[in-house]
Every structure is written in structure tokens, then in C-alpha cells.
Length: 446
Image 1 (spheres, rainbow, N blue to C red):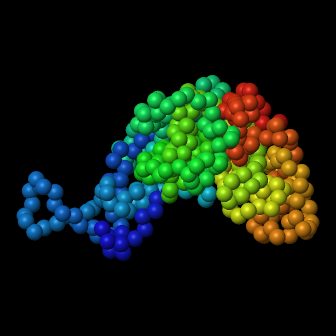
Image 2 (cartoon, one colour):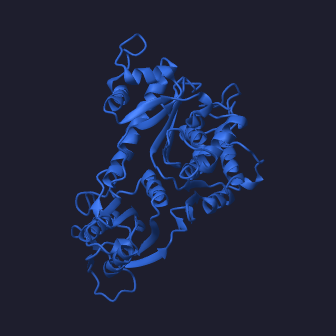
Image 3 (tube, helix red, strand yellow):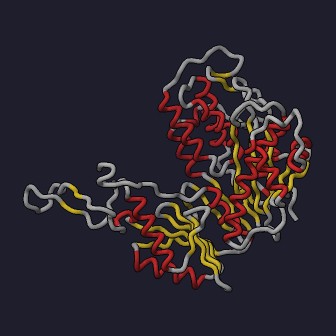
């Protein structure tokens, strides 16, 4: 296919992982029915957007010297995913579903007595509804348009194992973790209780303070880190170490490989661990944000992390090495709060579209008093006058009463697990609190 002749636009959206977890959390909190559907041969259901010709396949009875003109899309066409997405979008709109402005793969149908939400992941559909009749009507309508199969209550979706109970839902990746353990033969490596030792610091040449480490096969390293990155989908406890390993995809060494394999072995040893969502009466947004100042050995940049709970369901988390050197702990924490605010506002917009948004400010739990002070007071001083305008977004959110920063002690800061490799006495309790909400009630909840 030639660009501009056989195709132009090829982009097709995929549901954000936070959106998927958000809908799962809403299903638990509001007792919504969860159903999963699959569209068979999805890409051959839509019409092509321009003339496309193909060679006649061997065995077809056709005169020599001729070609076929496509009437419908085919698997392998560059624009096939986009054409299917546009077709599906039209079909859903005809049924009265509204498309989210914040996530193109989120659809909702709202009346006085019906609340139905759809999340689209290519040709898989996750449905949450309070009305079984509407779900059945949706299924019958889709069967007239596609080869549409009901999978019932979701048990396995996009690599996630789902288990639904009366008042809870658990998410894990047992099958996926078992598969990658076998693929990379991780059972031979020594067992570990942590994804990374707290004293481990990575540099371009390997472990900090150690002799330069020789290079390793770049494709194998990237394959392992890619597999690890997908595991972060349900395992926030490895987000920091995986983010660290991903920084060296361009020049991996034996030390980097040891670091990545240790994370894999940890996931293998804890593959039964599940992210648990339990029903709460007041599913409010609660956020933890933290930063580790100058933590990177080579660049002295700071790593920040935040996590967002809906009730006691952890729906979003991130660990990232910030850009640029921060001149103080307060500045590093302030930047982290700004990044958290951006994600909060996006989640709030999603909830607003679904009529589930809280009317009072979202609590951001922060363990730095100077950061909290800067968010409330537009004071210009030697400490903050160099900060870029974009960093003050958090101050604007506080002024608009969208968020409110509240001080908590460092021991209560759950986001600490997203800023650095922690020793076992600190790591394990935090891991239990975020994976198992029965052991912890996030601060800020009613």
C-alpha cells in the first residue's frame, strides 16, 4: 500500500487502562452487571474508504491479468483498524450511546432508569449496566450488525484475570505472568522477596559504584522489559523498578539484565497476588503524591509518583523520572502535585460524563509542607521564582476548588513505593495496603 493513494489516516484509539479500571471500580461500588463481548472477524465488517485492489490469490478461478477490487476491509490493510473503529462508532451511536470526549473508547447510555457503559478494546467490549434488559437488547442489536459473541461475566480480558464476588472484584495476571516466566526461563533464577534491592542504583554502565558491565543482547533485554511493562497493568508494586529498567533500552548491560530478571523473578514468586476492589458507600477520589529529590545517580533528576483511588479501589498510578534538575525537595514535590492534578482532572471529566463526579475538592495527600504552602499562596521567593508557569497548574486547581492538598506523615505516604526502591520493612506494608484495601482505608475517605 502506498501512502496518499491506498491509505491516509491509520490511527485507531484503544481504551486507556485507567478507564478500564475505573469502569471495573464503578461496577463494584454501584452493583453494576459486568458482561464481556467479542466481535469475530471485526476488520472485515467495514467498507473500504477508497479504491483498493489486490492480487488474485492462488487457486481462485479467474482469468489471467486481472485483479480484485475490495468491497470490504481486510486484515493486513493499514487502515483496517481505523475503518472498523469508525464503523463500530456509527453502530453504537445509532443505538443511542454517547462517545466520551476524554476517551474515544468509552461509551455511555443514560436515562432515568438505565445506566450502561461500554469500554472498547479493539474488538473486545466490556459492558457495565444496571439494567439487564438493556444489555440483552444491546446484544441482539449487535448480532444483527456483526458476528457477535457473548462471553458472559468477564473472567479473562486483555491479559487480566477477573474474579467477581458479591461486594468485591479482584484483578490479576496469573496466566500472563506464568507464560512470561516460562518464556524467559525465570524459574532458574534465585527466589526474591523484592522487585529490587533498596541499595540498587542504575547508571548507563550498570550498577552505581560497581565496575562497568559488558553489553548484552539488546533485543532480548527489550523483550523482557516490554513484558514487564505490561505486567504493571495490575501490579503497581513493580512500577518503579520497571520504569528504571526501561531507561536503558538503547544500551543494556549485564547488570541491567540482572535487574530486569530480578523483577521477573519477583513477579513469578508473587503471581497469585491480586489487586482487590471492595465496595464502599462513598466512592470518592483520593490521591497520594510523592517525589524523591535528586534520586537519579547520573542526572540528579527527581523521580515522582502518584496513585489515585476511587473509594478504596486503586485505578491509576504512575512512576516517572522527572525532566530537568529540581533545586529543592519542595520543588520536586510541587512538580509531582502538578502532574497528579493533570491526571485527576482527566479522571474527574470522565466521572462527570457518567454523572458520578464528586462536588467537593479531591484530596491530595502530600508529605511536604512547603509544597502545600506554595499551592495555596502565590508567593514569589528565591525558592520558586525560577519555576516555569506550567508548574503552577496545581495552584490554579486549588484556587478553583478542584483539589486540596493535605499533609500526611511520610510513614502514611503510599506513593513512596512509586519514587524509589524501598527496603522490605517499608515496601511490604505499603504493597499490602494498595493491593488489599481490606487492610487499609485511604486517607480522605468518608
